Length: 279
Image (cartoon, rainbow, N blue to C red; front, side, top):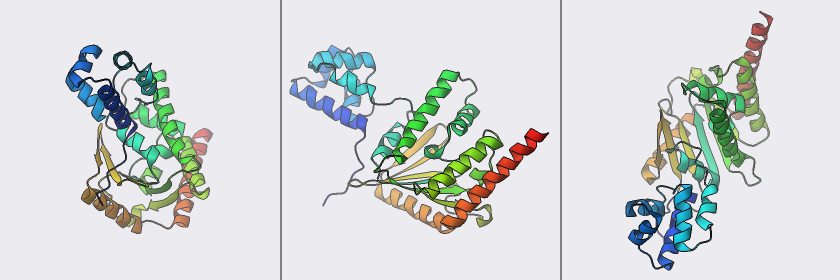
């Protein structure tokens, strides 16, 4: 048996189909690039799934291959709204059978309310328009639908208590956000555990972590920093990430205590909001 590879992303499937159609048309990458008016290297990037053509190039590809708008229409379904370094992860999570996420300082994106997302996006953008902000929020909400499907992945969520207490967007936004997380846990849509501040040092102290497992492909791990991220599919590295997650999970509160703590901190935020209203 060969080693399992990670699943193909939609953009990789797009590139593979482009290659098949090009070969069937009897064209080399150089010949197709001449018809599309781009470099052969760019065609190579398209076929490898490293890049997607822009709408105009997709239309020229359709004309060159006589594919009747096939590649232009498919391109519309490949959402470019995510940061370039996260797009592959956003595509892969739609194929996952199990998701394990750790929120160190923030509630993970899949669980965020619109108001919480808006506060996060506003915080690291010096200039933004309402339209840009709305587009980002909608894209994040669309990602979260993966947890709403009948065949949704098993979702483990490990949150540092710091992420619960950091007042993102104000106490009312935080209360709403934490009640949403607790409601999802009570509804069985995720398995929730909290790492209390009293736990001290733990195995994930230095990084957020996102683990994706699949039915018929190798698992992957994702870590993210400021304006960058790293997707790992090396089996040894992914196994080490799973070990770190398990170690941190062993230091967390039980499911019942975790849900109760989230509710309790949500109520603290609610009381803070009420006090501000009374002043």
